[in-house]
Length: 193
Image 1 (cartoon, one colour):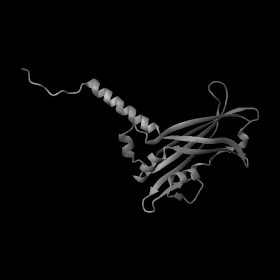
Image 2 (spheres, one colour; image 1 turned 60 degrees about the vertical axis):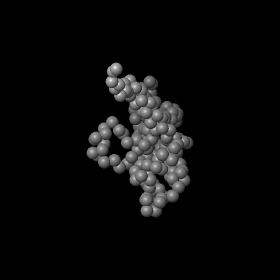
Image 3 (cartoon, one colour; image 1 turned 90 degrees about the vertical axis):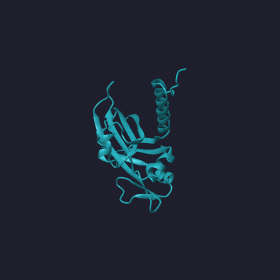
Image 4 (cartoon, helix red, strand yellow; image 1 turned 90 degrees about the horizontal axis):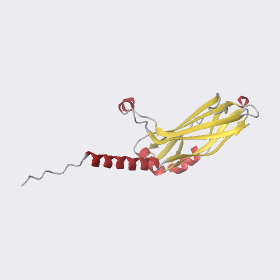
């Protein structure tokens, strides 16, 4: 009679289990998204303004992060280029907006800062705060005179929600982790002036 050895899972079984776990984790991470709304370009007192709103799809997950002490930053970057041929044209303007969001454990309120606004916005209800603050945002892209009549232009927007305050030692240790709570999302608006 041969002694029975405990059965050890094979490398293939381990690989399948790991792939399944990663797939399920990625699926739950992708359930959250940033949605851009009402993206328009207009002239306000001679300035080229990009106006838009940002909504968070999956507020419950970021609520947990905030209540665990994480500070989040919404980053919105816009680039205006002249459309020329297959590879595009020269970049005419660029602007960025960063808004920070955190939870105050003493007051039990969410606090959000916006550029150009002295006092932070506060509300005990995260969804109401996000609608009020991020529902109507604007980026000053520079003077309106950079646009020429009869030309085609592209406004490219990139928005992401990431951890705002991550220690440098942590970034260096986990160099492959970007710290994005919600992955970056890109949009393009093509228009003719």
